[in-house]
Image 1 (cartoon, one colour):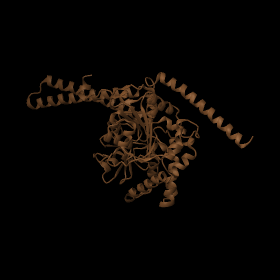
Image 2 (image 1 turned 180 degrees about the vertical axis):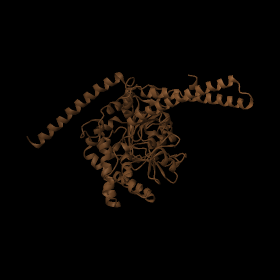
Image 3 (image 1 turned 90 degrees about the vertical axis):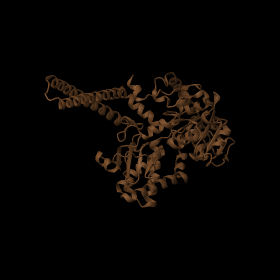
Image 4 (image 1 turned 135 degrees about the vertical axis):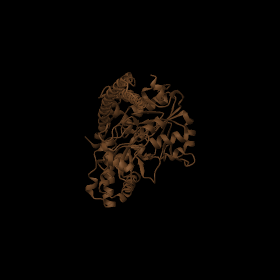
Amino acid sequence: MSDKQQKKKQKRKKRRASANLASNSWLEMIAMAVRTPVFDHERAIYTNRTLRFGQVSAVGFDFDHTLAIYNCPALDDLAGKLVADRLVEHEGIPREWVDEIPAPGFARKGLILDLDEGVLLKTDRYGHVLRAFRGRHKLTVGQKRKLYGDRDIIPHVTDRDRFIQVDHAFSRPEILLWSAIVDHTEAGERRKQWQRIRHHTDTIHRDGSLKQVITADPAKFIIPDPRTEALLVHLRATGKKVFLLTNSEWEYTSAMMNTVLGRDEEAGEGWLDLFDLVVVEARKPKYFDAKRGKPSKPGPQEKVLLGGNLDEIEGHIGSTGNEVLYVGDHIYADLISSKKNVYWRTMLVVPELEEELTVQSGMPGIVRQLREVDERRTGTEREVMHWKAVEACLLSIEDVIESDFKGLRKLRHECSVARKQATDTLKDFIRQRETLRSRLSTATNTHWGSLFRAGSELTHYGRQLEDYACTYTSRATNLLFYPPSHYFRSPMDYLPHELESM
């Protein structure tokens, strides 16, 4: 058989494989639609602010980690090795330092870097430090108190850029390298080491060395989801404009899109028909600032623009403000900027949500148990306070009355017994709560616990999600399981005094 015949045979085999994959995906999608999202909470879309999807006339998507689902272990390993090699070659860092990185699960979104102290932090919504690691060593309560006391570590108050928020999946290799190097770094050098890591990370993205490896073998780094194409077709069929808005370059986006869609890698640029507009090299978050955005340049295809600004894209799609839903994974570049500057409706894609819901489903009832124990703890705590107040009143009466009445002694004894019983019950509820919290937290992530919750409070990341994401979900394609006129209703908010009356 000639080389030409072999190539034709391989192409036919690929087409059959793609057809089988598409067929299987449609069967899976139909099966999922029967039970999603009512029963499968991992595929649900959760709502912070009420959204009438029927009033949305245009839906936009980010590319990386939104439409493109990466094989994160492979991608992180590649990026980490490329940066490590440059740190060794250009900065003189010993190879053994960068070879001693922590396990991949140690690095995750939502953490805070303290560059001066070389510490990685998890804070609650108010900035209180809850967990902290210097390198791979967890700080004790005493060490945390010595470093931070009771003050708040508020990430958006930069304190000379001392605190850096880890807000994107691409940051994980940086955190792992930083955690390996900081153990060998003196206090005055820690900031410089972070700047070196950042410089070389930016370099491998800018000079194409990272993307050159990825585009040479897209199937190794991308997890194709044929539901992605079904979603784009569905949205356009229901009358909504669909656009892509990404910081990635055209060459990279074009080279990866067919793999993202589960199509043959050599299918060409037919995927453009799925979009009304494609904007690459957008330079988000600057793109959402009309004063800083620059005019776009024509792309290689008619519906492709290079860069541009907010006014241009709204003019092209014919929709403005809350008529637009933008779906992205970057809490700052995709959501906070678009929400603050242009009032687009937002959907945050959080892959970690699926992981946490899977953990909770494997521990049935644990969240409900935790809530019930916490409610009982609160009630018992008030009971203890009540008996303490009564005892204090009886003591004050004893000081005033000269003779100690028998009835007074009896009342004091009864109050003491009641207080002790309530205190013992309270201690038991506290132990139960801490046990449940520890089980849930450790199962989610052995180092950091939940991405969204820190004890009874939201994390800083959880607060941002609550403030800026109208909706959030684990995958962009979960939108496929909702009709085009769906009413995403937010749950009712309650003040503490309202909860008391329930």
